[in-house]
Length: 164
Image 1 (tube, rainbow, N blue to C red):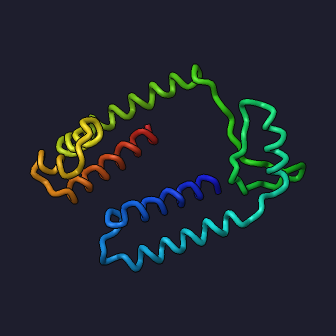
Image 2: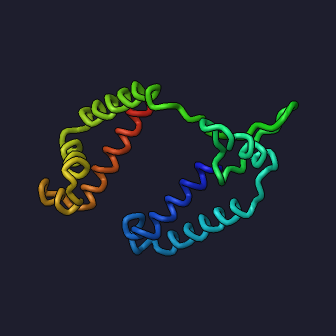
Image 3: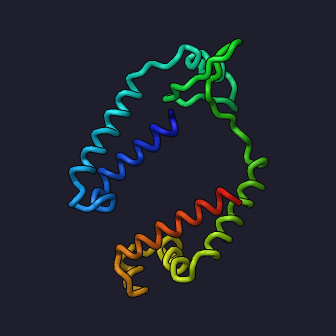
């Protein structure tokens, strides 16, 4: 639930902050309807009260530094001998250094595996910090084509980092 709510909030922010990027003016009615549905879903989620076991878990875990339950958490799983509450376990950095190194390697391999032009466009935008218009000028492409190439690159990189 927490991840879903966060995703909905991020989507809502994108719709509000960059409405023309999300959908052109011809889709304004559909976009507005979707915004309303997201707002309703978030309001319903926030209105639902959490299971008492979640409050108990938060209280117990508050005393230790390596466990926590998100403030917006609402999901539980009832089993024969109790209730499972979703939470987080903190892993100290020394244990994650190797994982971070592996992810960085996957990320670099994924960028290297992109089609040449897409990789150059991605690097110009993400590494060199150029906006879409400047990248488009550099490569002689429209901002829309630059945006599509960036989306393609991000999709490929996310898949490669996740699947390797």
